[in-house]
Amino acid sequence: MDHPLAKSRLSTMRDARTENAAFRAALQELTLMLIYEATRDAEVAEAPIHTPVARTTGYRLANPPLLVPVLRAGLGMADQAHRLIPEAQMGFVGLARDEETLQPTPYLESLPKDLSGLPVLVLDPMLATGGSMLHTIRLLVERGATDVTAICTLAAPEGVQHLADSGLPLRVVTASIDERLNESGFIVPGLGDAGDREYGAV
Ligand SMILES: O=P(O)(O)OC[C@H]1O[C@H](OP(=O)(O)OP(=O)(O)O)[C@H](O)[C@@H]1O
Ligand SMILES: O=c1cc[nH]c(=O)[nH]1
Ligand SMILES: [Mg+2]
Image 1 (tube, rainbow, N blue to C red):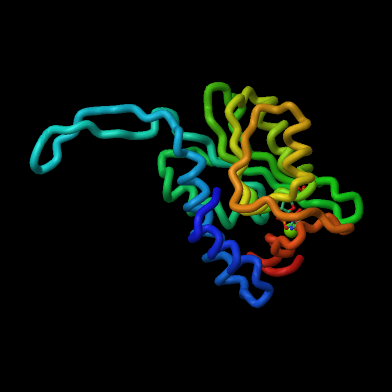
Image 2 (image 1 turned 30 degrees about the vertical axis):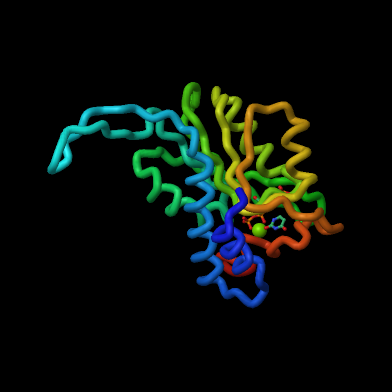
């Protein structure tokens, strides 16, 4: 997504001087824009409605998606996404990346059993090596999902390539593909550890 307002919110998030509360606020506003972009081609159902003046056609999402925030950092996107799509169901995945191996360690999985026919929007601000997103998407595909969109505020080229190489059915909506990963697996220039910047260091 390329939009001046998205760039402005992402810059607030990147700025090391931005405190937790302002970081969460900017993430919420950017989430609104990313969800708006991700649902641009969503199927709509029509039904006749009456305005105070005339009869016209009303629209709603034909097949509301499942929202899946990846804890912790994705939790900061969940309420905003739900506000935009209140009829959506929500599932949860909890992962913490091992600082040495960079592999995701799963600690929570709360998803509907059957996802066939259901579009899924995965919410995680960061796509770095792509390991956490791939783990999450595999859980979804195992349950029959065939239409998965990863919503990330920013991504590393290495992570995008990792997802592309997986051959899994997915697309990525992001406000930026940054330069690279550094030797510690952090996105450069990035914004640091998204979970810590939302909620404090663990
Ligand atoms: O693409 P990857 O290399 O897998 O890295 C991305 C993951 O790292 C962050 O979570 P983290 O493990 O820091 O957990 P947190 O949200 O609890 O801080 C981020 O929110 C992603 O889930
Ligand atoms: O730069 C990064 C990489 C992984 N996870 C984060 O929160 N930030
Ligand atoms: Mg983190």
